[in-house]
Length: 231
Image 1 (tube, rainbow, N blue to C red):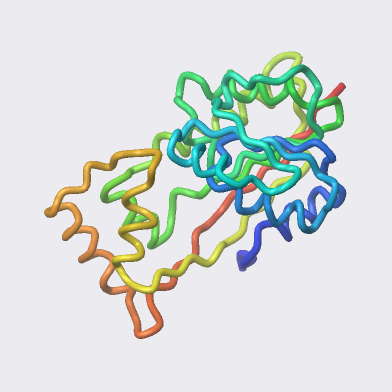
Image 2 (cartoon, rainbow, N blue to C red; image 1 turned 180 degrees about the vertical axis):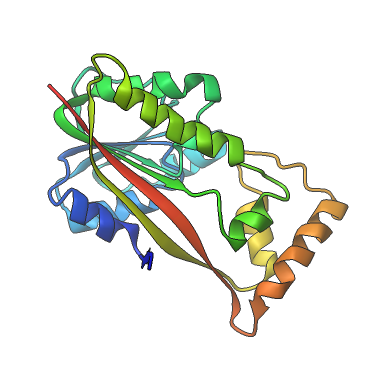
């Protein structure tokens, strides 16, 4: 049976019990897990990179102590060599342009110190929630490309990477109703899914069978790969 994990930070703590002190996240979004990391491991110093201008502006409004944010993509990290101990890519590698995924992983290797870790967490293209989402945002190609990019990074001649752990798990996802799903999933600030009335109605019809008096509950299958930067 696939393990159910409600807080992915618990899994990260299992795989990397003493992260940091210097942490970088590529495609940080609202950096929610990073904020919890700083509470669990005081003394961490965190940099979050984000290409979404709207989200980046929000991150800059009142950043918690120990956190800084930079507008940049994973394929062009504005940092020196070997500055970080841990890099995070949380559901973000598949958002990197297809032609830039290899460069992004090379950049992460460059900014990690020898012995540092890259934690790559990607959603699996499967499950009832995925069947609804793909009606308006089919990520089958990009999710497969993300895994292929990791495979290439590991197998390349002279690769700086070694995979030291791999985990698959389910993460619960809940929505109170379709309106919440529409807001959270269909209209992100980083993408325009071109949602018209007809498409919204089609997605709502697919969502409806999952609704109960307590809302709609799903599990999202996830795939984590932990890579270590070799000397």
